[in-house]
Image (cartoon, rainbow over all chains, first blue to last red; front, side, top):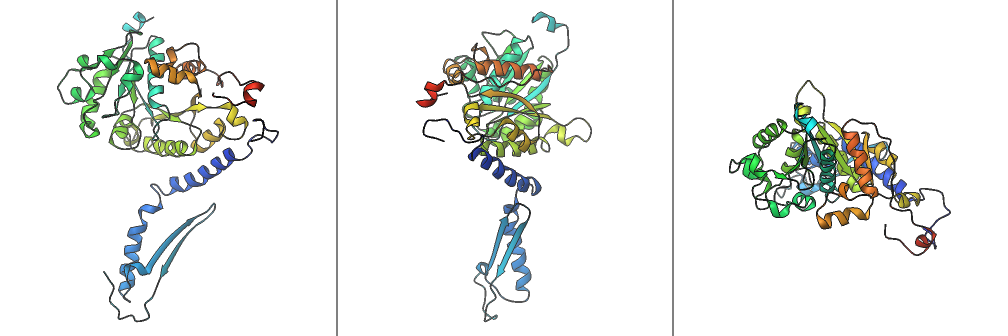
Amino acid sequence: MSLFGFSLKPRRAKTAQTAKDRLQLLLAHERAGGSGAADFLPQLQNDILEVIRKYVTVADEDVEIRLQRDNAVSSLEINIEMPADSGKKPRS
Amino acid sequence: MTTQMKEKPPLGQIIVITSGKGGVGKTTSAAAISAGLAKLGHKTVVIDFDVGLRNLDMIMGCERRVVYDFINVIQGDARLKQALIKDKRLDTLFILPTSQTRDKDALTKDGVEAVLNELKEEFDYIICDSPAGIERGAQLAMYFADEAVVVTNPEVSSVRDSDRVLGLLASKTKRAESPEGEPVKARVLLTRHDQTRIDKGEMMTVDDVLEILAVPLIGIIPESQAVLRASNVGTPVILDEPSTASMAYEDTVARLTGEEVEMRIGEERRPGLFQRLFGRTS
């Protein structure tokens, strides 16, 4: 936008293009993943916890799951904090 | 014009006006499109599916004539003929209002189907005005549709919701569930189009939106002061002539009936230099 309400800049200065780019990125993911990845993350966390608990005792909050969505790839980051004292009982 | 239709069996085409997002112009469009179809001589009924938030009656200007509603008919408390309100301006246009006091659980799939089947015996076009959202009311409004008009604003949340609704049309409708037969024919109606803002790069273009949604366009409705003016007095905006919005809806209606009309972008008077310098209100 300029001082006088009209602009000498080329068409589509900024925001419309940004809107389009954001939508294209988002919808590519939403369409592929059906209702979106957020739906299965809690279940995934539970399942992972269950498997790990076969071997070590970990608390619920010691597992952290993060999803990062980018243009070409999505990454799923799972951090499990292993207790130093593996005999410790989980809190729940 | 209207008497010719009598000999032919009714077309019985069900068209849902839907969007996902609220406030994008579903009811305005449902009112305008149904009035436009009726004006061409097609026997048309427009049904309000927004149970509990009745508004089609106000936009159509018949809010004081509502006695029985859609829910009464579904539950067998009234006959369909009693609930249908005949429009005072067009004798081929009827309105089926919804209930203001019940909630959306009052709608049942069987009940909706029975009413639609009865309407198909008599009407050429049955326009279903969907509520916002993607819950029961919206799902039932689209379930039996042959065609869909997905009302979209050139704005990120509206486009995203439209995409979601297009997904539902392709999976959660009777046509989608039946193995053979055509899917629901879905087309986008772009409303609140503002060429001035597009020229400034502040609004996505028609092509941008179509590229994202990947469905055909049924019409472009410019941002227009006529829309509020018409709703103030309870007239479908297509009857508020001449305005850029009414012309755009007329083109849209013609395309719905299968006519090929060139896409044009009618805008409110383009602001002159004076207006551009000192602000504008279009």
